[in-house]
Image (cartoon, rainbow over all chains, first blue to last red; front, side, top):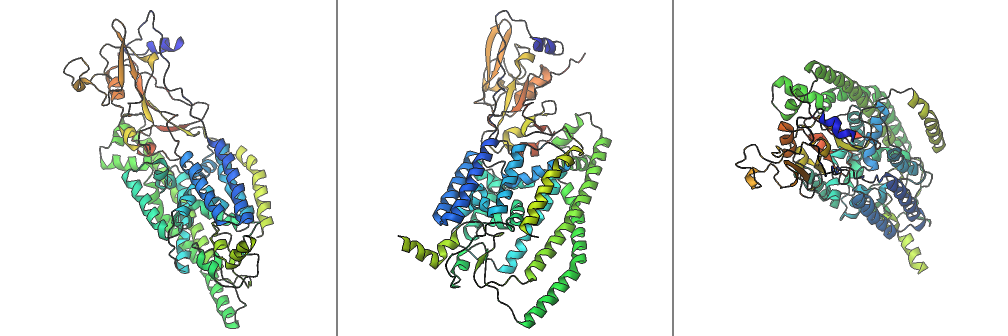
Length: 405
Length: 181
């Protein structure tokens, strides 16, 4: 019984010495089970099942069941958080600051990427609870025009860079804070966050996977890795009759039309466009850097120390200021810390801006380039969310199914 | 770049990663995964009650019996502006009547937190700290907490009292306030 004695020496009211009363146990000692191992195991199983459904069974119904199971298990059972989508922030923070990264977190983050290298984005198809809820709550597809789609697709890249800077400088994990589907999984409908969920759900009824395509920063990594995928999805094993039904059936714009040889004048104009874009690269990098430079003060203003310094300077009597004044930290220390942070964010944000400029140019050049000659409709594995709609849309596949019966 | 090149690059990265980790600067603070409140930093602002994403906050008041004075007139139990020392609502500090008081020996009373009722508002903590030993404190209950990657209370906490602790140091207890002589 050393603990009470130790406290009694310091406390205002010394602990009484009881005759026949023993101190009750503190209520805190209830260990919550760490579900990360279960998550890893289940995720591996899900990804294996998804790959089988998509490449072997080729059944839309099986893939829908996969989405339902993913939503139930990873969405509601494990309360969605932390999910692989938000984990890039933990990884970025850990790598940059040298803080400890849990092995389970690392595996959860790397597993979908590793699978993407072999089987494309089966993770997005249903093992991701965010993807699953969007897959299931989709009613009628509104096709986004191709140029607009390409522009909007740059948003995730920008968010990936910005959120990484935020994570590295401990401004916070904005993706997890603003994640639109988390309130649904936790059944918490507090106003500012629930409005965001409602907006995304309503948009998802008409635009297929609005979060996956135009917000998800993890999707950028998955897109990159699945570009090199070993297994390439094939719409049909029969001779394609170029009926366009699969292209119309895909709400995600992942099906590429046949590419012809092209005329000489087309070749010449394409060559001119690419050389012009190449000449524009330095300007794009500079513009990106400038953009990052001007974004930095906005980013760092969300950091606690910077906000506190601003409130102290303005003489606002907020709770944070009162809490700060009760600590032993001096204002000068706080100010020095804030200035150091602001400088760091300025550098990182500028670098991120340059990188974003590079990505924009790379996308533009990739868009201007001619693809490999192809006579049939093909799936772009980096954009395919493995939903299986094209299998259901293809008349040849349907005929085959009918024949088997 | 082909698939093979990428795999080779990835393999190289995996091989070099442990060496890179050796030369990296180590940082000990903020390492871990479970959210806890540092009771010494906590200012009992009441945000724990309202900001948690769960309908019932995962933050509850915890009683550290070892540092409790078992006072007859507990300042965490009774309000400052009480009319009388009895259990009438206007005298009580706790808005949900979650503190159970039982007689132990003359003149000592045991105070127990009924966690079904506790909403984590921190009013009793503030009261206990103002006059008593500070044996009551707010803490994140690990059996309730969902361990959100970005804790909303941590984001709103004015005192920056939320920290992430590793699994082998799972709880932070309060140090009792020192006697002012």
